[in-house]
Length: 200
Image (cartoon, rainbow, N blue to C red):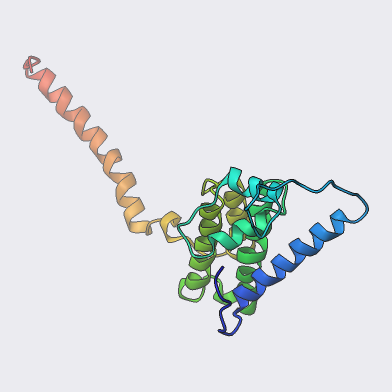
């Protein structure tokens, strides 16, 4: 077991701790009112969790690509499914900080990529990190839907240079070129057939 880190608590750590406390209190509230027989554990086996919870944790596995993977997986033992856990972690760890950061800006600044780039990239990496830790495919339908919702909420009026119309002079040139070429081609075909040279 690692020693606690004496560094000050960051906002992401605070969100993580809040989520952990919520998961623990929800689990405790769900256990009140019914009795479960104690689980038999393997002799000599000690764990932070009872054997059922640990077996659930082991069955699903946990990614190890990121530092926080063990913490995310420890929280997920209190959920019925990994998808349910992912949705909760996504909302508490990624979505709320992103929305808070976006709402702290003026809506006129939302379309300036330099103002939102860091928050947007952090949000994207957060969703990917949790999915990797929980061994859930990324991107997935939930993430794609949330990105669509985010774009419709925060970026609906932002100009998209990739889809903007070209300047009128270019449109005129592109339209007029084939229109002018058609009569020229007809004249060339007629002249060629009049001269009797139809073999080419």
